[in-house]
Image (tube, rainbow, N blue to C red; front, side):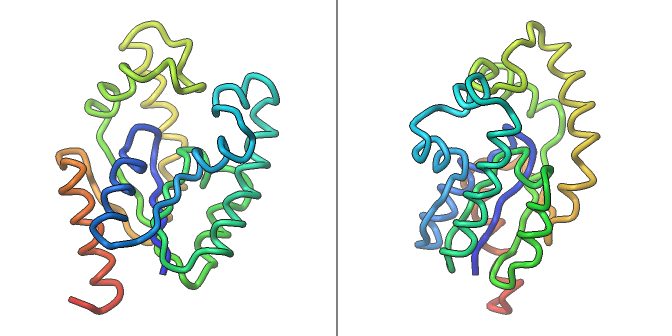
Length: 179
């Protein structure tokens, strides 16, 4: 069974996913990195050169390829992946897939994003932490309904990457009836 991690940008999908894959001895797939490899450009460059619509179409295509070709991988989505098109429905309809929403409160999220905002197209132009917090609150409010449709919701606000990975592993094992 694939484990699909979804959540807002900065929630820890990639870091937790990498650690989880190590702990569970599984392949790790970062959807954004895979898109960058296939197109030979960073996500920021793709947005700048080809636009958001092109990126979202490519993202949906790569998501389907991954879900159809993997059986026991840990897959980290981009923050917007489940929001666009029928991506979430596609994830939920896959029988061999467990979706987990990595939920994080605003304060630690804004702290994480402030330092890395130049590498994130949606927030690169935000010039104050107050404006970033306002943007994140609004954006997260708009997206929360979709994220909450994941099979499992897990608050990672106060967890280290290692703790979050172990918690996801425990959830997965419970879902599989192992523990």
